[in-house]
Amino acid sequence: MDQTINKEASALSEVIRERRAVKKGYTDKEVKETLVKELLADAIWAPTHGNRQPWRFIFVGQDQLPTFAKKVAATYPEDRQQNREDYLNEPNAILVVTMEVPEMEKQWDENFGATAAMLQNFWLLAWERQLGVVWKTNPHIYDQKVKDILNVPDNEKIVGFIHLGYFDKKPIKKDRISVDEKFSTFNG
Picture 1: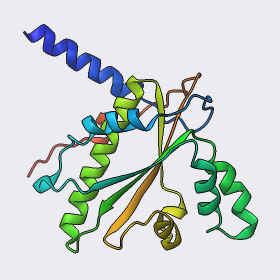
Picture 2 (picture 1 turned 135 degrees about the horizontal axis):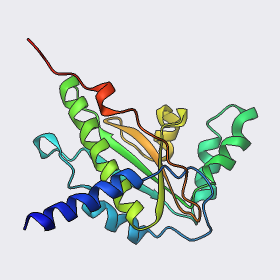
Picture 3 (picture 1 turned 135 degrees about the vertical axis):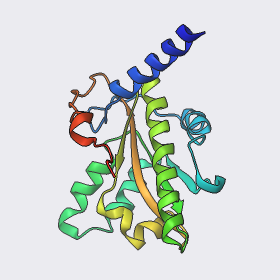
């Protein structure tokens, strides 16, 4: 029994360490809505305080991406619109993730933590399927005009645009600072 647990932990550890942010270099392979929903069905099992499950998802598939990119880009100053439109057309799909915004700061933190944990689950599950992911928090996610484009209600915030796409070349591994440099023990 212990060997099975160690093997599973090792496989999970490997996926965690091998996962990368795929920011560009996407292939033309379509990201299917059905796959995204399948991955989310597992990802939503993230810890969520009070079982609030504060997230919501808006999928922008390949066929709608050009129209969506043009609308979001139009919220920028004219001299930046073409750049932003091109940028938003790079991935094969975008998953917009929102979260409920409660009035209490404590619950806001809990909701954001739960949403971030769910997104990490999604990212790891996608990586296992060779689907590239990167969580984007560009200025447009804070723009009311973008919330209006997406029909995001006032009691929600856009947490990020999750750019999705298949890739041929895995991004370079970037080392992490040693845990020893970030760890201390309380000696009260």
